[in-house]
Length: 90
Image 1 (cartoon, rainbow, N blue to C red):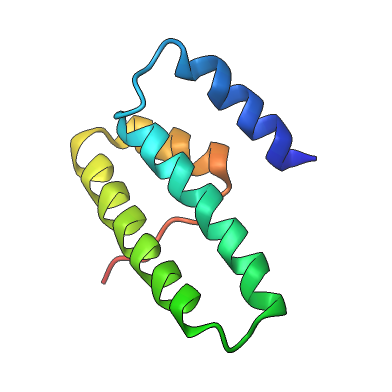
Image 2: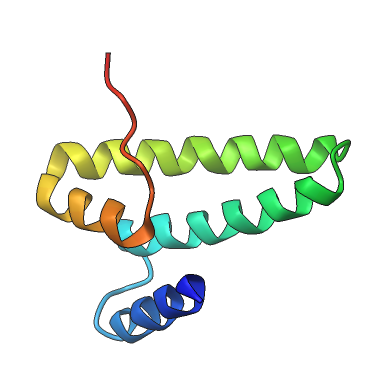
């Protein structure tokens, strides 16, 4: 399963990096987003979880925008590893 392999890759790198790094934060937000998305498929009217999902999506989007401005190479690598599509810019 892709999810388990991603977790193992990041857990190995976690020892080298701090948990406060942008990459680790985006990774943890992505895991929460995937978990909440699967929860909301079963419980469509759980509005509190929908609100939480939107907040986490916004936080991840802001972190990705920051990383994109600061270091485009790390941003592209993270997008590829997490299989997140790049947001379109206007």
